[in-house]
Image (cartoon, rainbow over all chains, first blue to last red; front, side, top):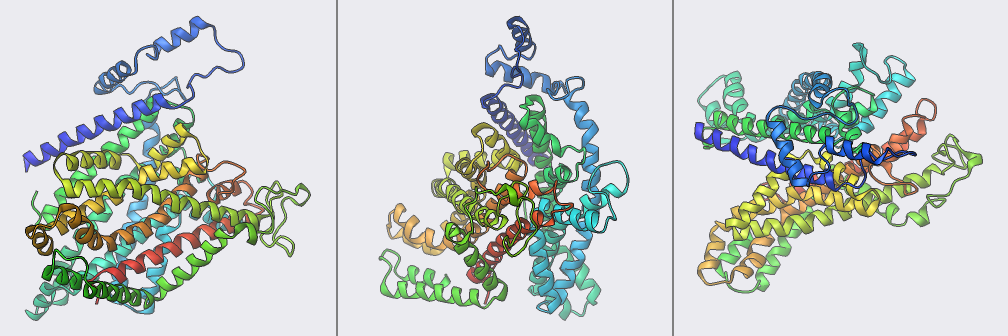
Length: 305
Length: 302
């Protein structure tokens, strides 16, 4: 077990190296200079000094190595778009906003999705089931920026109950969390239904009923535990997605979270910020996948690592 | 599918015999029947077919070319002359939506085509050859998975620039992973099955095993995945364009129309409503067709 985890962590390090290298060389390939001169260029000497300060006068592979060196020491550099702070500070300031929205989204959508999926599975092929299937497909496929626009139109513009966007007050949470919750709720509901339906028809459940076990015990112990496996497959991988934020939601509701940096950093060629964001997301993903695989072994003894 | 496997096991080296061909036709017919029994799938197929027709004949269907503007008639609400109104610079909004639909469809199909061209051969190579080919492919897949999908697409767009052709390439280049993994996984499961081992033991060449025995059996899940990849590609294009990193003016894009409508939506509600409706119909149509195909092609469903 320990050996397996160690191996996976080493694999993660390899992936991070590859991801950082690809991103690093891609950013250097992007046409356009983060310090592109405006109408009046800076003097040659100043430009050269600035290039030297950020290491742009060095060959790219050497820039990459020195970047890796400082990353290991926890120094991700200074974002070009906010030179008075550091990348680490900027992320520290904005990620909590995104995480708060993300946690609220998870807290609402997962229980709600489980409930809806359960209802649909128990009342299979009823009108309610069809309605929920249609609704969850709709929720799953509608881009959340489309949902956001609809919500703004309805609740902020027509009914004037809530602000169209912004940040700071409790009411600013409502619409973004609502828009953000729709897809995970739909996803969880769909998978809960499918895996419950599959498990309810399984032989071991029939055996459990034949043994005369109480309905509650069959549902919690024999059905619930097995239905959890596909659940782990879809729900856990959603978590990093939700926690690293939606570019679209933050853009649509003007939320000062992490998500907007994905866009602004690309537009402004903010190399240090882009690299830090990509690495952050890659780490969150890698850890989640590892946890998912470990959870499998707890839930299903047939799965061996 | 089981029936075809049975037929092959009896006569592994032979070309598909008449009986085999007939059985396969029977399988297809059964799958089609199962597909048409599902109401949501049929509704999705009708909607999708209609949208494709509209997109295909956009120049004939739309009242005006997509770039045509009449500044005098800017910011009109839907009325008899302009069924979906006009936007801030006097585009006939119906034409914009129709041509936006066309853009979405072109990007959806072409990007998935690119993804297939990359993902399926790689998956085939990894699944058939194994060894270092498999190792390299898996590592590549791992790295691609670690990149957050739309983020990688954004970087690529920043490098190569927007426009329909580049968006198609970028979405294709970032979405082949799923197809590659699926192809490889299918091959790994099939490779160990008895009918394949039987074929191998009777001396059927590897290439023939791949084409005649593995591919037809790996096809149904691939068809489903490809169908469901189309709405995902459409989604990505709309998202990139929403962020301003996708299709450029004057080509209409539904995603960009939604983004542009945000600043006018307080008054001109139609600017937001109609492109979102078009996106919703597109996504729903393709998804229901894909879901229906999955249920119809799954041999366990009976």
